Figure 1: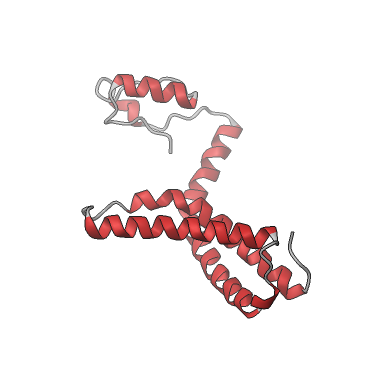
Figure 2: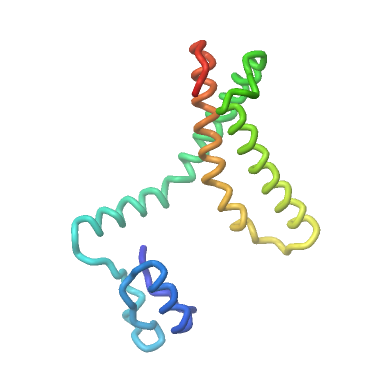
Length: 152
């Protein structure tokens, strides 16, 4: 939900409003009612909030399903290892995406083990769109290899 932030100072709030093109909100310190939902009463705005709430509530389950399907696709791709060609653009993209994801996870695992206190898992969240793309492409390539034709 779109709510007023209680810990933003006014200059941060105005910069944020400018960056995201939102209407200015009243500051919660001066207006306690400012933490109510601020959504225009149009069909498109209400539909956008419903879609955002749906994605926010169920994206974890989609990601889990994609992870399991991606693991199955990886097993299939290992089975068809002899058909891999580095000149195949999709195989190259999969290798690059997989390396990027693994490097980020290893980097943050190293930082978590050596320097950070616990609770900074949110810094791994930016890699989730890459991981989702990786899983989708992996599944696509596995299906294409099972059908006997090359993907892309």
